[in-house]
Amino acid sequence: MQMIMAASRDTYPNEFAAALRVNRRHIITELIMIPGTISGNRKALMSLYNLPIDFSIIGSVHSHPSGNYHPSEADLKFFSGFGMIHIIVGYPYDLEKGTWAAYNRSGERIELRVLE
Image 1 (tube, rainbow, N blue to C red):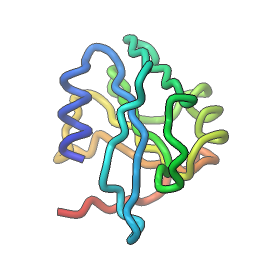
Image 2: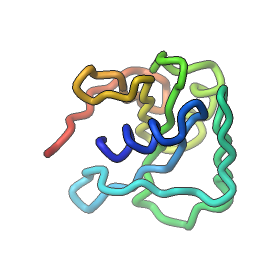
Image 3: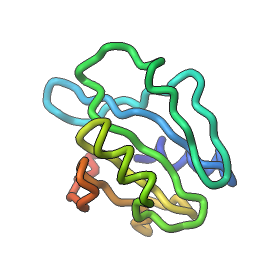
Image 4: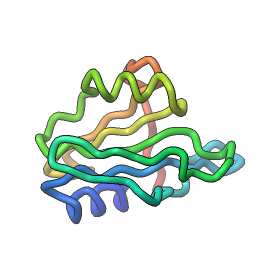
């Protein structure tokens, strides 16, 4: 999560976006930067066709520079067609302040523990 927050701060005022990879214990361990991703201040477009065929990729993460970490209609549409877990982080991208949330493919908020 620290890496996600740092990448989001570095990309600000544009959105940061990446795919999430899990290990055999179903712990998110890696961010997959997708070639061809386009970041703007109101959206990030990931070129999913550039993803490798890899069943350990289970969802996505992206930032909302507005500070709102609730999914938009476009987010909900994306969630329903890709992956099982989606994380949205909001400005100021601070793990201690809890400016993030995780969602399932239906857009329902889910609990996701951060491991040290």
